[in-house]
Amino acid sequence: VTVACTPSELLAVIAARQLRDDTTVFAGVGIPLLAAALAQQRHAPRLTMIIEGGIVGPRIRPGRLPISTNEMRAGHLAQALPGITDLFLLAQRGFLDVGFMGGAQIDRHGNVNTTVIGDYHRPKVRLPGTGGANDIASLCREVIIVTPHERRRFVPRVDFVTSPGWLDGDGSRARAGLPFGGVTRVVTTLGVLGFDPDTRAMRVDALHPGVTLDEVESNTGFELLTASPIETTAPPAPDELELLRALDPDRRFLG
Amino acid sequence: VGGPHLKPAEHDFVAARRRLEAKAKSAGEKLTSVEDAASRVRDGDLVAAGGCLFSRTPLSLVREILRQRRSGLTLVRNLMCTEGEWMMAAGAVGRVVTAWMSIGLPWGVSRVMREHVESGKVAFEEWSHLALGLRLRAAAMGVPFLPALTMVGSDLAATVGLKRVQDPYTGESLAAVPALFPDVALLHVHRADRFGNCQIDGYPHMDADIARAAATVLVTAEEIVPEEEIRRHPDRTVVPGFLVDALVLVPWGSYPHECYGLYEADFEHFEEYTAAIAERGGRAMEEYLARYVYGPPAFDDYLELFGGERLARQRRFARELTTSAGGFAPLPGLPPGLRGQSPRSDRTSS
Image 1 (cartoon, rainbow over the protein chains, first blue to last red):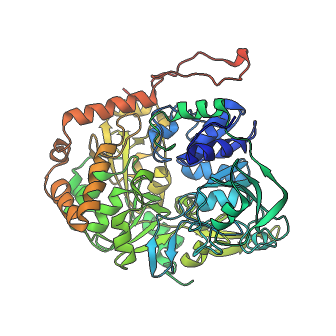
Image 2 (cartoon, rainbow over the protein chains, first blue to last red):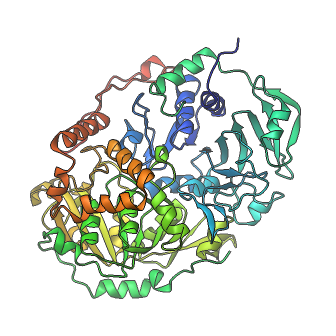
């Protein structure tokens, strides 16, 4: 039985399923944080959430979801507040299993741009900047990008590499001085994408129920590889949606 | 990609060391007025502000610096918020060194930042969050750079001129993140004694590193406590008094930004502020600065604009978020033996 849900709810549920128990996740505010909290409540009670404001192991307080990663709401009932630099150093040391990231633009090798649209020196739009995204992309054991699937976001080559994915593919990430990590999956409103292990080009691994490959391709600005077979994700279960909706009763992020 | 090159004076550890050696490091009285404290900032200074985004921002000092019409400043802050917008709109900064600038997700990309950066009026020097933290950490350590595994491979590295260093032991190549020695640090803390021994509750952010990295340290505090109280809990002191040059008592000194455990950020105010800018652009910003910065002579007059009721409500919200109010519910799935009942005690200071 398919349960009706919004695109944001679908994104959060599918993202939550990517997280395993007994691991750590670096989560930004919004959908990534909701997804991590959902995973923790449903199947990963020994998951530790890490928030870039310098926060370890907070509990999300329903109805008082944080707007930023650096405010009291984000650290509600936290286990430790080590400070920002020391928190990122935990990632550099290798304590962070998964980094959840969004991004204005993403390309076929999983590079993300949150710096400028257009030329760096004469930008059409100056975006807010990396924040911790570059560090998460550089330092976590793996990165999972969570994003709406829109053609304007999925571009052949990002205007500016703020957060390195696989750079140009084919081992270029390691050669550039990034021996660890890399983007493993892209969870979108249409499906789940991975990367070819050799070329590191983006590949359709799974489609959400009712979504066609055509739909994914027409919402992507570059050619996609396809897994064979392409899986179909299980639709959000009633208990997943119930737990998720309880976390955001004001529907601040769930739409 | 070319772009702004590193300014050698900003990471010259020898010059920074000599400057500190030449300076008085007094255990004496530091209390002064906000006007006097802010007057230590000179045109063209590299100014680092403590806190992060809308948390523990030294807004009373920023306000006074703008009232004194400083210009040509470079503002260093990892995540910049409305204080950065004020400084841009007031014409006080020509450059920002940051990882991110806007107000917060719900309010989109900062219009004030876009206008000033896209037009070339303000240079935006972008470092990753950790790299900028390490620049301040390196300066706090008195070394010229720190090796790191971040920022390499990205286009950010080229735009700021980040160099690499080879590990002499393994031969691996790492980022060599250069130190950043600010002229002045602006900090807002929870409490200090009159000698400037500072304690912070909740998020430490990067304040301890900033205080050690800068040549001059200006502090505002929510509360000035007797010396004995500091000596009773010396483990809580993050900035020893001899690092501090000027100290000012400013309750609510971050408002409408938050101060951990004491007041939550005033999101309603952010809504009004961003709505006005969206509607009337630079004109709204001018009106805002006239009303909140140039108009009210003292910080108390500024706080009057928000009103006591609003402040009391924000204090209540902060207490709710930093105490066990709202309840601590163990997660489902934990074995019964692990289901603790202990509510956390109030962490905020009395």
